[in-house]
Figure (tube, rainbow, N blue to C red):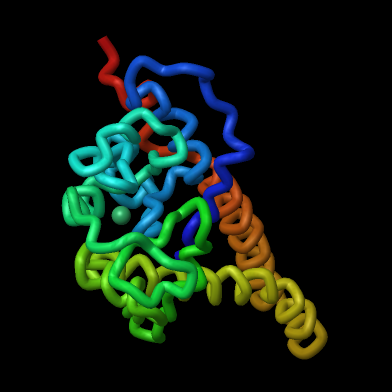
Length: 213
Ligand SMILES: [Zn+2]
């Protein structure tokens, strides 16, 4: 699981909005449909309905920033709820105080280590703080991280299969081997093609899951 690096400068936005919710599509797009805090993709959490526009600096404490585009991010409902109005201190550049690093200034991938069991470890005071505060070691996130690692290994193994198959071809020459290999080559091609198409699917776009009338 990788956090999206948010680049507000690349985001096309309406010039003026009457309310912050109107920024939703831009904010969703710049986040690549992932939560800025836990990095979960909306496909893994029931779709965009379960994602909120997050006020990085809480609007209860920074009311002037309520419609400020630079202060708005895409966050899953769970992180959004855990964070709520929490704002312990202003973040600093070496992350040495309990605080939320600004997702448009800090690459969240640099704040954490992920161990082989999928557990997240904070490298700084700030990242340790947010792991605790918004519960970044939730069971689903641990599983997602494990799955991400396994998938990366599986992808690599699948990519290496044709080479392995060609080596096997040289050893045993029989009809059965040919049939097995054929099936296996077809299956590999289908899996690769499926995995590529899967990456492009947004499974929970509301317009696509509306009930037919
Ligand atoms: Zn989240």
